[in-house]
Image 1 (cartoon, one colour):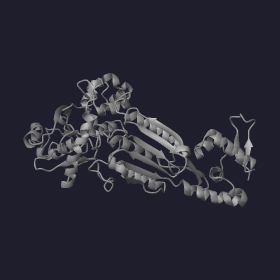
Image 2 (cartoon, helix red, strand yellow):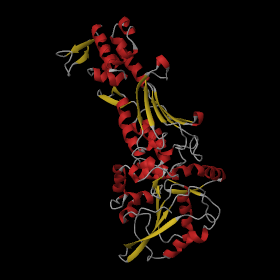
Image 3 (cartoon, rainbow, N blue to C red):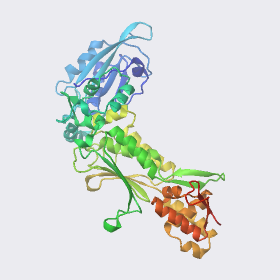
Image 4 (cartoon, helix red, strand yellow):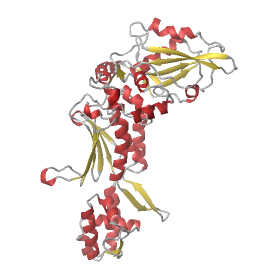
Amino acid sequence: MSGRILRDLYFYCSEPENQFFDRKSARIKPLDILRHLVAFANAEGGQLVIGIEDTGEITGFNYGTAHDINDYKNISLTELKDTPVNTIFDTLDVKNVNNEDDKILIISVDISSDRVIKSYDGKVFLRQQDKSKELNFEQIHHLQYDRGQRVFEEEIVQLSDLSEVDEDLINSYKSLLNVPEKTTEEVLKARNLIINGKLTNAGILLFGKNPSKFLPQARLRVIKYDGSYQKVGTDINIIKEKTFDGAIPSIIKNAKDFINTQLRDFQYLDEDGKFKTMPEYPEFAWFEGIVNALTHRNYAVRGEHIKVLIFDDRMEIINPGPLPNVVTIGNILHQRYSRNPQIARTLCELGWVKEMNEGVKRIYSEMEKLFLKQPEYTEPNGNVVLTLENNILNRILRALDKAKNTLPEKIFDELNESEKLVISYMFNSGETMTTKKAIGLIGKSNSFCGKLLKTLKNKGILEWHGTSTKDPSQYYTLNL
């Protein structure tokens, strides 16, 4: 057992039951808690608190028909002999609802990385959000097969030590857990992220200063293309690319900030006569897709890294390796299982990870809210790909129809696609145009966009406003 992190009483009373936490009244039969202990062990570990009602009311062990506290401590030892669960028991002194001195029992359950834990009756349970669900024969088989991949998290990085830890990240983690008095080593030990002074793979990935020093595959690369296809050689069409290779929490934050600068907003005239802004994609959809990729990828697959490809008409998030064995393309909306339980739990505590299938469901709903095509998960070549399609083309075509009816047909037909995009945007939004705005709109270079606007001015379509070519406030308006 690696250890545990104890929280305060308020947390145990108020925290919603979730993937890592459950509470039960001491009136529950001791035998009935076994399904929850087994489910936590087969998933990402967790804590079960006995003596608090589902409502958060503290009833303790001196209340009504409560069972003896030792019955709960002994039940797993007597009934799970063949596949024991690693547990630590703590008691917390409290006042119960009758204002009497009492206790609650906190059972911390460690992850079972090398085998599937079965209950006393041979049944297998897996924690799924706030429920401990029984698995069928096929699911148990998949779970047994997947045990080997989980060992990767616990492998020791031989050349590492505490000096490799990013102290800012670990201090933020301690602050969120409300355990600032704990040392870095104590916190890492509690999550089994350090063994005999050396960080594990999971420890390096979560809190390392430079994870790619030890795990070169632990990177995320964002590539933005001009057009809808990748081109190579002399026709290469990469507009922008950037690689992120820090600890996972840093990659999440920095990649989010960068991608936001690469996506477009669309201006449209609403029915109320006011201009509104609609993003190219809902932020939650692509961001959750990236977080899920970083959380659940198979980091044992070397030579590959996560890629985010941005095309004119879609975004692809490519995650090396297949889905965890319990999860399939067919059940991804409903089935939760983490290949990397230590990483998933820590990122959840840091506030980055949602419940897996809850997050996937919301990806679908957020796309639907913007009237975008349903997201698509596929597994080509043994990788997991999430594809999000925009409808920029349809939006542009609608705006182009309006602009085409305004411009003389010959002039409009001679415009290239970038020129048409600028004109349709200005016509539809009523806004002025600058070189900087054109860069964000069409995704081309500063010199390209500057020349484009001058060309439209020379054609008499745009009118330039400014005191000189170096005027920082210069802009263009439609000359129609």
